[in-house]
Length: 193
Image 1 (cartoon, one colour):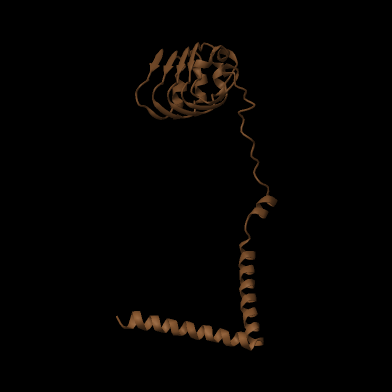
Image 2 (cartoon, rainbow, N blue to C red; image 1 turned 120 degrees about the vertical axis):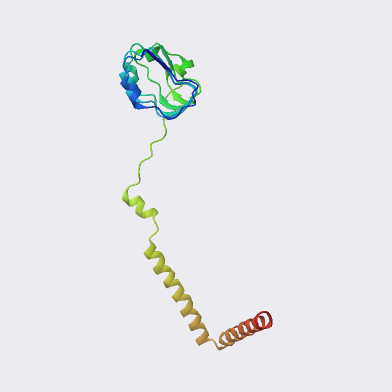
């Protein structure tokens, strides 16, 4: 088999790695499908490949650097995908222009006149154990502080009522009023119906 044209076939899913096991394929066209995932590094086994068209798909990830081993490659197109990162610039890849990569806003390299140093995301270091301990809520401390606060409020209320007879009377008037209101509403809406 010297060529495989599967373009415009509504193919979906990831590109099969087994395609890399067809070393005599000279042309592979998988364009205008709904292929997702990354470009398989196994394509580097296709040493006789002259044309590779993966345009107009939903491919993501980086262009594998192993593809620079394809010395016979004269036509390469990955335009209109979701590829990112640096474009290989060795071997045949140094000959491909911007038209091979258009529609991939996160690609960078000399072919696109876009520096990769501006495109690299900031490195996020995982937090060490000390930072994790500081940011995590200690549930035991939370429970004990809640219990301590509750006990302090109740004891403060009881001490205030025990010491001050005026506040004690006001407290009992408040409780008596609440009981009367509850009895009134309970009798009016529950027992009469």
